Image 1 (cartoon, rainbow, N blue to C red):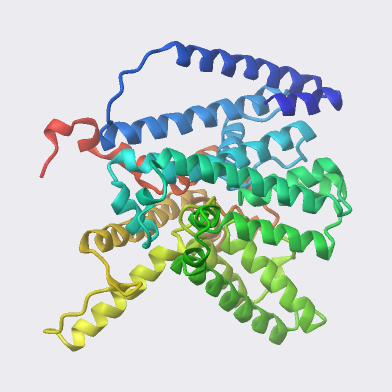
Image 2 (tube, rainbow, N blue to C red):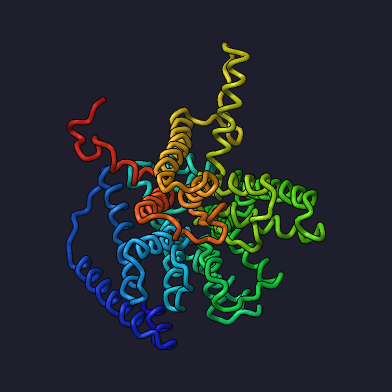
Length: 465
């Protein structure tokens, strides 16, 4: 909050400066008090771990909403909660029609950047303590080398990946400096893309920003990097270059974008939306990367794009990036596993007595891992359907309703229909809170939020078999 307070003082935003200072002091007091409390070292049960995770995120969202609420700009508390949830979960959508002040815009991008880092640390360091062993996590998320043989503990991996995240932020910030943007907007863009939050796309008009071809290329490269499997960067850090190049998910990730970009390019060229094939191809790949990484930048007017292109972008947003990344969505590796399970199911229908294991990198995929991934994908679409039913109570058209839910649960932030201008303020307060919950659920891989609605979570002794 201190950098945002500094920007507020510099721009004479007195209300914002006061809000940031008050909340900074409050957070410092809370942090100091927490350090004084002595905790007994123990291994938490999965239920306790989930509760700690969800409580911390809800606390961050509440704290993040206060600067908006205290800025005296007339934002309702529900709108402030939505903005904060959108920032922390790297969704980037907004319900505020007027441009944010520079200090609040910086705050939203900083929360998005911190949210991206927290997610990476969460997946590399905290998940094992929520009941998923190191071996199982390594196989489930990234089949390949044993992580424990490459670092003494997951905490070390988290420190290294966190350091890589910061280093990449600095690199892309320096790459944007030669562009026609100011230092401030170069920083805003960098924080928005490396975290895959895409916040600046909703406020681009504030600074009369000129996105040159060079700037757009850097932004898309940053978004692509932010959604890459950070385990690959960890392997490079450990000088395991051959292993990094052979990473299965990373290769599939690149293939997905090349295929999606080619299909969207062909559709745009045939439809004649752009004057030249080069322009159509360039815009196609930019939006494919934007949606596929769940960054949600809108560098083109998508309202006139063919339905096929919009559908492809939505599919890419649902798919998302890699595991161990700042990206949202289901993740590439899970889609591949489900695809192989479907192929196996069809084969077994034809050859009922055949024994055909699901092979992954020339190794059979354990049944419990296949079951876990399948359950997650089914749960993901189940939450999507339930969320769509609830948001439909606002009586918006189907395209607006579905794309709003997808934009939230995938943390993509960009939608179609009445949301083509990225204005989520059209929804009621109840729908805004529902979308905020979907953002949080999608960001935390569903389970930490879903378990809160399970009776066995609150009464483990009375859980039914």
